[in-house]
Image 1 (spheres, rainbow over the protein chains, first blue to last red):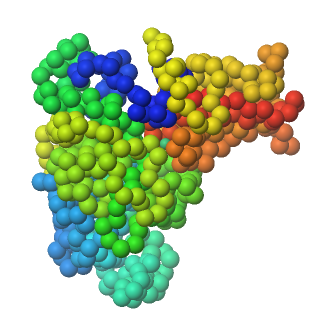
Image 2: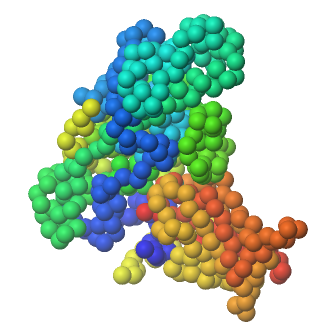
Image 3: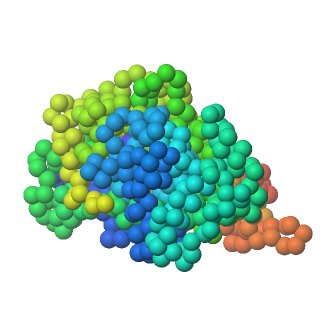
Length: 410
Length: 145
Ligand SMILES: [Cu+2]
């Protein structure tokens, strides 16, 4: 594909002049190639960070761990508490609630193995390392890696042995304190002090076992992939020459798709089979709490410093290009958040990193009018008020519901 | 198909910084701004995937068309209309180096790794050449889909 220069600059430089002359449902060559890129692929790329992630034994262990509240300090919170299967593995509350309340909304994890960055702020660079931190986050599961490793070795010994061939002996409380983890602060600082009493060799044992648990959970999460939706069947029909699209979308949805690809310019960010560019943008959505959320500005240095990142001793990945080339000082990281997937988006209200918008109508209205401005940084400059009609707005919302396939089963 | 209308719109609405003067196919061989060198640009892979890392490759010749193998060539990309560059720190590859650290670029091919286009739209790809005939540069526009 060798694009011409002429057509390019006006796309963003003067979007208001961009006229889509083809009526909804009659797709130009450029629109057809956009449709092709949005369709689900035949197969997904493998998760290179987790070479054994497709093994049944790891998937089995990971599924058990994902739904086991015994990993949390009060025995009541599991990964599945916030990543609710019946809600496409996201949550209904604006902000995540574990033992406390976090400052962000629980994103869906369906399709999340496609990385390369995890969390709204990308502070993890693998699905397995992402899976570790909620277990210790004071507002989420509030556990600690020593007692978690011990708990799994005790309660899930059989599954653990099937996955990894052995069960570590961490029963000696003089070597492995009751509860301990590094970098605990505030009223949990005592756990960090306990961690510091351990020998480096014993710390390495715990970290190694802890990483294995993350890799098992990631293996399980990698099975949670989107299934074919009406949109995909529509694209197949259109690309095979059926101008009716096989009747897989309603007229209203086709109108919405036309806006999505054209006037709305949604694919500038919501691109690819998961409808995300997997990058970070500041869309200028208002903070829902006092202060501001730095987003990727704080996420980038965290992932660079994480002992569980791609360069760490627990990583099985040879190339760490994403980490190597990451520029943490990129100006527009300020209050930028990862573009979420739109697959199953009608199942995952509320929306945005802070869950501040209750419905898809609210979200489309937001992008149509762009109210307010971000507390810090600046709104992505490609965003301009769209001037949609009421019919176009509701068309986009209707179209978005065509991205929902069969429910993803736990 | 070569639409004519966009050319007119282009003239009517562009106020941004340095845009290429001719409507060339992306990356095709062109003179640098002051006519000092001939440069072409290619991507590997082509086209790059959205938010995937890729390598940009410039081929440098003198105005007579002879490859220049011992220049310094830097490639970068920005979205001037959005006021941002790439989220990565690309690396200009040294080429083929001998034991005393002298590097050459056989065939006049210079590579920069770590490119990443994190959003759709027009990216301005700049090539800055520091060579035997001085410093000169050329820009291209690539439409990321
Ligand atoms: Cu941009």
